[in-house]
Length: 347
Image (cartoon, rainbow, N blue to C red; front, side, top):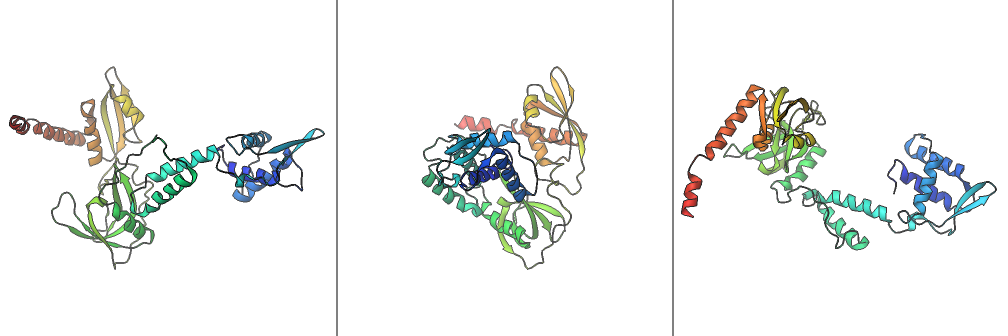
């Protein structure tokens, strides 16, 4: 099925014209009917051309469309169009091949939400479509999304989502990685985000009044709070993450110019999957490429830099270079001790 804009509106309009026995529809009439329908639905007069209508008719007559039984009746130098079977309609036909493929794509997208509490219906509707329409029964799997259905904290998505939707403050019992004891936090949730297969909720701490993020897998309990919800009037989450990698944004963080020395063996990977949207090539040499980034350094950026190993070196700012250097020294120290050697000796 053609995927150009307003295609469905045109197909439905043409179907209505073709099954109207009381009027002869010539090409000019079909163009006018489609334009009127598009204007009625969208308020836009885009002006469909003859070529588009002929392409639509060709598609509707094809096996990829609906195999419509269309008569091309010549009258002088003009042709009018009408279904040979007056009871025919594309709305009475089984799904065509193109529609099946589009539905499969939609189901694949929905499958990303399987296992999440508020999407239990995805499994049910997928099973019904599989059995009723035979869309994917016994079909070979051809795509898989990166997800972890066993991740802790997924059960918290529904109550947090509802709290955001209905603007309710919540009491959260939270245990961070850096503390042994649980914290009790009155939290005003604003935004849910997934990063690196982990879910985070962003909102305002009722005590500090700072925007903070909490990892859902570190949340122990959630209850509705009696505190009045404080609405978000300062953060646009469409822009909030533009200057960082990941989810950690310090309240004191400022954008810095970061220069990385990338080996030319690694550079194709950095080039095709940029570290950040601000990434630019600063200089290219025989063995390495200098890459420039403008963002706020954070833990996620450090971890990403380290993941590239010896293929990447931080040149500036000095503060980030020193942090990476210290982390590399700690990693190196791990491999200087004799723990592994003792383990191998015992084995």
